Structure formats: C-alpha cells, structure tokens
Length: 277
Image: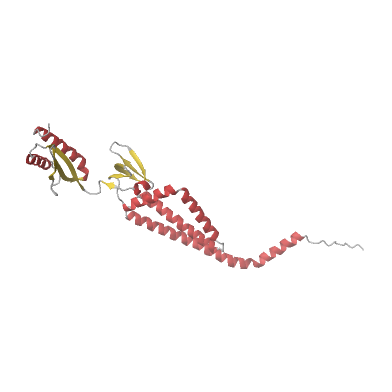
C-alpha cells in the first residue's frame, strides 16, 4: 500500500506581516470610513460653501465700487485680490477640518507674503497711492495739475503710475507714490478762476486816464465774467512807474486764451494812447 507524505512549510515572515496588517485594515475599515469620511465630507462642504461666500463678497465689493464710479482696472484688481485672500482662508479651514495641523502652513504663508512684500515694496507703495488717488479723486482725467514738480493735463490715472501730457506734448509717467507724497495743484478743480495782470506805466501818466482805459479793456472782453465784477487797482507808485493790478474772473477752461487776448488789447491801447512808447 502506497502512502504520500506532505512536508509542512513555515509561512515567510513578510507574508505573515502583510496578512496581519491587511486583516487589521479590514477590521478597522468601517471605523475609518465613518470617522474620516465624515471629516472629508465636512472639509468638502466647507470648501464649497466658503468658495461661494468668497465669490459673493467679491462680487458685492465690485458692485459697490462700480456704483462709486471707481476705475474699472482697480475694481477688477481689488475684486480678484479679495477673492484670493478669502479663498486661502477657506482652504486652510478645510485642511484643518481634516485634522491637519495648519499652524506651520499659516506661518509659511505669512513668511511668503512678507518676502513678496519686501521685494515689491516700491510697487506696493505706488499701488496704495494709486488706490488713494482713484478713491479720493484729487484730480481726474482731463484736469490740468501741478504735482511732483511737473505741470500738464492728466491723460490717465493707473494703479501704479499717472500719465501727464505737457503743453509741448511730452508724455510724463509719474509714480503714484511720488505724486501722492507731493502737494498737488489742480487748476481745473473749480469752474472759474481769476486772471491777475500787473501793468506798469510811466510815473508821468495820468492815473485816472490809465485806470479808465484798463477798466474799459476788461469790460470789452465778453468772456470776462460780470459776477464778480472785474477790478483795476492801483498797486504801487514811485518816481519811475505806476503799477496797476487787473483782476478778472473767467471760466477755468478759457483762462489761457482770455489772458492772452487781454495782454494784446492792453499793449495795443497803451501804445495807441502813447502811454507806452
């Protein structure tokens, strides 16, 4: 009678460890699914709802700025910036819900923001100044201003710089930080301005005759405003000359042309009367 004998083999250690680990995973799978599945679901909900809220806040801010007639480029930039910042907070909150420690993550974001801020310090100061210029509007496109030692008509107000065109058609690009740090004179801010002329005549001239002549010249210029009325004052007199001051209010947009016309009329009339020779 023939019998077969089988030799018993020991299971390798690695296989035993694997089977043990796999058995442990299978046993604990329901617990993990319930515990971490709930956390994952909560994190997803936080992200979805948070992203929706961030978008709503960004859109609300955009509508408010559009209602206030803020520059379109600034509206877009600030809207996107606010949305990005809020979204970062939402992502951090979602990650934290999963049980991940976010302290180091927040510190890393802060350090990165500080590094970027230091690298872009000049640009950020120009940006901040540009925001202030656009929001508070000390001048607008088309105004004639003097600022940062330069005079011209405002062609464009950007986020980082302002473009001014001079009277000889030069294009000046002025950083907003430099423009904001200096005093600004806006020649177009008021609807009317006053022309001031100083006219000197020989001391031998008849004061009454000269005053009447200059008063008549101001009155003959139709573009000179009647209210307040133009004035001719005797400002100075000495052994050589008598100096009159002429003051007339005009529309701001017409100041240059009216002043030129008055100077021409004064020269013509004083020469014709032989007061100026």
